[in-house]
Image 1 (cartoon, rainbow, N blue to C red):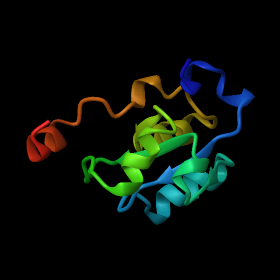
Image 2: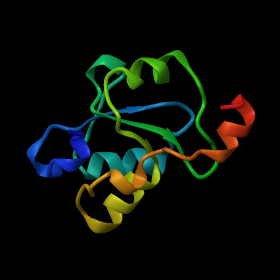
Image 3: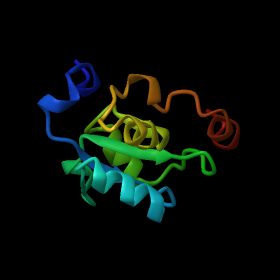
Length: 107
């Protein structure tokens, strides 16, 4: 069962941000949602790996998070959650079809 299928208020969200996704505005949104930011991939429950400008990038940290969580998300999860004033179910924000990365990495 994915953590996204569990009501968000019932769990501890520990967010790992893969660079260059963290902007000052995104950081402000994360803080207002009271989400903990972690640097260690082993501790994360959710990962922001892409935003509207940057597509998915294969990094050692991303590869490590794939072993820990299936919640690899677009930054729009935080943005939409901020607009709604609560963390939204992350299923529709999963980073599944990153066409730019698929072309670049040939996968």
